[in-house]
Amino acid sequence: MGTNELRKRDVWQDSSGGKAGIAEKSFYAVFSKKFKGSDFRVRPRPKEFKNIYSKIKLSSEILANIYNPDETWIHGVIPDFAIDNIKTKKTLYVEVKRQDGWVEGKPRKAGRGNAHERSCKFFTPGLLKILREHGKIGNKALPFWVVFQGDIARDPKRVREIHCWYTGYPAHFFLWHNSADGKPLVNHFNKKLKHLLT
Image 1: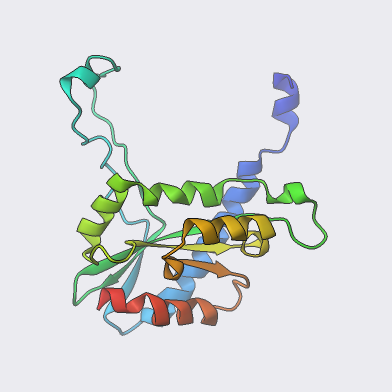
Image 2: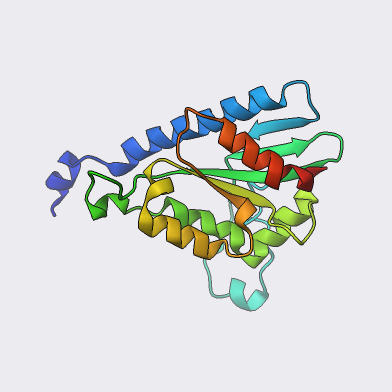
């Protein structure tokens, strides 16, 4: 496809980005209301990891083989949310992933997309270690929670992938089928995750 054709084509990130923003606002609205007057708070876009990659020390051998600019830069990770217990100083990091999916009336290709795959960066040994140290919730649980929203929460292919990836940690993901109803989301947090922060 040529440059002119590409310019005319809809950019999928434009529509999916807007939908993701709505998903995040729904999550924030539910938990800011839930935590009002409690020891818990929800923080959007926590910045404590925004520069973790820039500070990674590399060996002189590795440095000799890569580009090393003189200027400084910021490079890290910013989760969608942090849920803090103000008393215990413990934190659970949250990603809200909204994605289309293969459901009734849609072709199988409607399930393409990789929002759910991008959430897997939190499973990497280095990020797990950093999030666990900062969140102070110990090594027996994951230091993050991923909320999947939209058709992906009902897509027969993606739901199976998610269940496979989270084997042994079912509390750390939630398939939010109906974002107009925050009750199942809050119930999941209360029953399966809240104790990690107390």
